Image 1: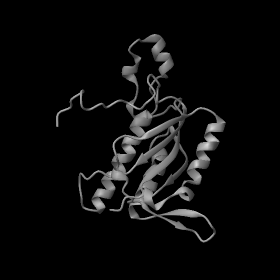
Image 2 (image 1 turned 90 degrees about the vertical axis):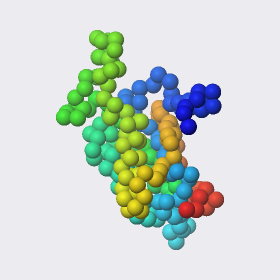
Image 3 (image 1 turned 180 degrees about the vertical axis):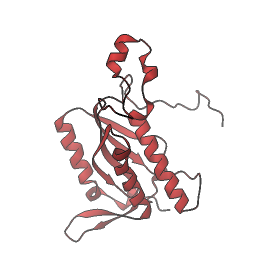
Image 4 (image 1 turned 60 degrees about the vertical axis):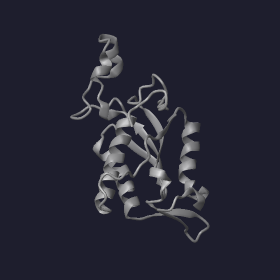
Length: 191
């Protein structure tokens, strides 16, 4: 179906004018296609806690999330949890990194000198590119395993929240850490 702006009201959920490549911490949530529970299951650990036991696909999702920081020197992975049908995680971007992959001039300096500086911004150093790369890698590996090329693993888009202070960071970290405790089997769509 051809895009029709009168029918398809695709609006960005990102903060208008915000530079998602700048130094900061971001709370990310990514959900599976149709909220299908493909990464594992929530079980009682025997000590009154609930944990997510990851299956083969869940282990891929976890490995690739951790790998995000390994392949991007300007990214740090903080608290995260892989749930049966979504991921919650905190990403820290350190925009002042320099080196073989992070040698673009600082954006504030460029903007002061060149009005069209945003043309030089590295697209691989923002939250959108990080999430896009993660989703693509997980999807490719899972689809190879299940022999279903081109089948979506993730729903379109993702949720993000800019973490602005220590109080917000603490609250979000606790939310992520205890997310399995809040799990309700009704949150899961069977596949």
